[in-house]
Length: 191
Length: 191
DNA sequence: GGGATTACTTACTAAATAGTAAGTTTTATT
DNA sequence: AATAAAACTTACTATTTAGTAAGTAATCCC
Image (cartoon, rainbow over all chains, first blue to last red; front, side, top):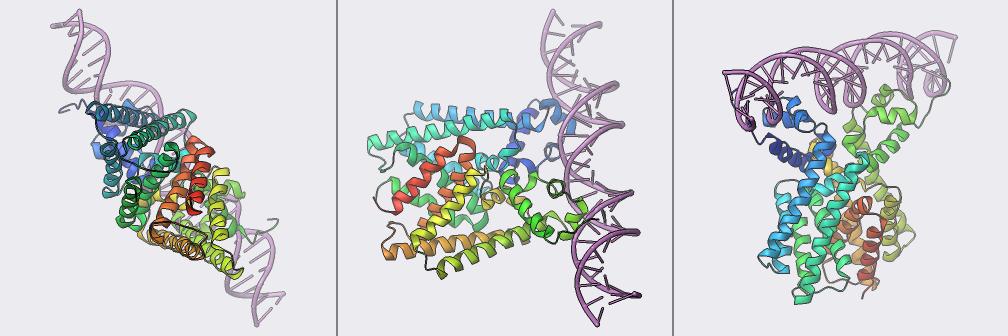
């Protein structure tokens, strides 16, 4: 053998994540990852016993990502506006990549997952909702945002607009997503 | 053989539809339908050459369903409020059945579908958006609804709230869906 | 009532998928 | 330098999946 790759595990997670967001969890196999990574099927099994273990790790990394994103934005004292912009930007990127958000993708396959993974998905969703709610609450306090609903309700409305907006964009095109995005911002910034 | 079933084809469509909404398109096989229907695998192939043909028929039936639903509601002169209520009710039922809307489910697997099916999905989505927009426009005219956005934008916001609301309910529970549903109605009915 | 058609079944195949066991090479440890 | 551990590969198995070909029973048509 020529050279051994120390970050094969990370690559597997990266490719697996991309496949879930572009094709769906139940639409890819270890063979797809193996082909892209130029390794044998068994190499994936070495790092992750089964597909569900890989999914579990992927969700864990998303939880970590949102934790550090939050930490970082708080560290630099980012405003609610900037924080929300960064958040929305993530969804806009998904549209450009012809992908959907991982939570929306997993929601479709949710009933095929073991309880342990379902619980982790719940943790991730709860975390994201909490962070967005904090941002909306903070933004209302500073006068950056205005809305009538409770922060929790406004968070649910915002999140569902974005998540399904990305899904819709796949089918009807980017324009619909952009319309949704602008409306969200317009409404929060006050009419 | 004992007796032949004249509506096997309809049953296949019914079970296939249910499977897509509960487990996702790429998570079920002909064997799952065959087992539920108590027929052999080849019987499904007799009615639908392949899985994509079945999906195509399922989407066709949804298009027909929305056309006749629209026709029927217009025939009885249903108000915009009643029309929208009927529409929202469909989503509430999905939540109770631990299912998601077929469009949301297919959106996850969208990139694995042949172009012919993608086009049909587009037709279905376009139809639903059109019908909801008509309802919102009519409701605004009669004073039943009030909203600042254009009917098209308001339709996109409403639809994404519902579609992703159903998906979210699967993960975090029905309460979040109910919150979204109430907020949608409250906002349309004017604050 | 004979032939065609419909709606299947039985029986098979080819490929994909998930997974394991055992061996090999590289790197790290002492 | 020897040993252990890490990161694989080769080679295999069992199951699922998609699909086909040929046959059969019931019903339709004239």
